Length: 615
Image 1 (cartoon, rainbow, N blue to C red):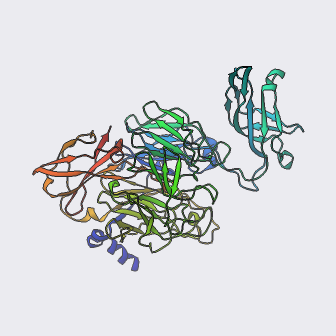
Image 2: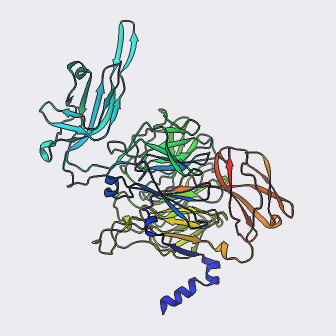
Image 3: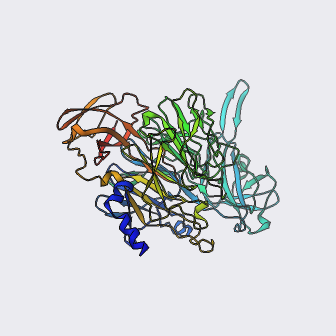
């Protein structure tokens, strides 16, 4: 009876007008994927990427998948992916393609499960005339006769030769590769670093030039290893295409879009399983190439939340991240000056040691430069979690975090989604690492920007599906929010039953879509809008439009959505059925990219978004 009364309550129009509504979607069995990444495409469809979906058997058989879901019709289509994009980085490019870079080259092996000793081998090439291929299975032999083999191909470039007055100086080229012992067990361990290893099968002349220098080769835990591969998805042809490889392998990287349309590629685990030591790359969508920026060497934990700001060449690192890295490095939030490579920390954040698996996003339109940090937990499997919502005004003369409202429960893995009425949906997460102890948080809130630091927190309807690690949320063109994924460690409170990946989707309909009457409508709008211009938009609701927003098409993974923001646009009615929009001039405000144009009426009800490209 109590459940019946509850269902009657949450399905009443009075309740939905105040709190909204959640709907669970179960796709056909052959259309279900372990969603790890989500992105809204200019076609209005959602790309859900699984890759191997954190399933090592899928990785071994190369059963790698993505799902294209159309929220307007409910149709879906499984599209194989050409590489394991599990735990890659992603963002939309200015031409509408989805860029996915990095992913899984090798699954981790935990302590006690490592059969063959392994580690890094530094391969040297002293020949300035030719490079050297290092194919899979290349064998390195230590002075005492222990043999190790490579598990992935690599190439060592020629050595560098610089002419001098007395001849030339040659500096050996070097590449690091991961090797495993040929013999299993302790007999494969080599602890002494710096030993010189000979490569089997080389002729004597080549063996003088090409050799290995071993690091510690042990039976200790071996981390996930990243890949250099990068791909784009064409939303029109609905096909994947390979682009230029990155210079560095990356697993858990962040792809931050820059105002000019380039993409900054940060952090991740490399081909050995170590966190990259600050190596940063630019992706140019005009040439489809990655180029290392050797001047940018800031160290970040994996999946760092780094955002472009309204100040040219100044990024903001909120401190939130979703994974690997030591406690004492790269954890402080601050401004990163791309001209000087200096990161200036900002003070005031509560629970600064609880930033892993926290969420961060803009509060209100990007012109306000208000950012919040929500929830978060301790490093690794720490049980510590926080309920804080702290805000920082990046335009303040002395930027510092200020305490905002507290969530009713501490939470890690919260999904933050910016809505067209300027509120933010905060949903899902768990109190403990990967939902341990049956700790999923089945509630949601709307954070409204008015009301002081951190805005005002109000209740929203409770979701039905729990989501923790590998959960995502994406704003849909019709103003609803799609949530996907969740990868609990266990399925029971006592942590005895292995977890099941959540394949159901759930869509939140905010209160603004239950206000009754007709929602505003865009009958005609340009599909290209240029900064600093004035454009006309046709709507029968011109005289009651209160806000106009450009909502950047977003992507989401691991509580990280650095390409999500809205732009406020000045508007005035020029008739009963026409609006004149004056677009921002600054590229740092109205960045190159793809947006949804949304009109919001005097009741706070948004129109369906109209797809717009800013060239």
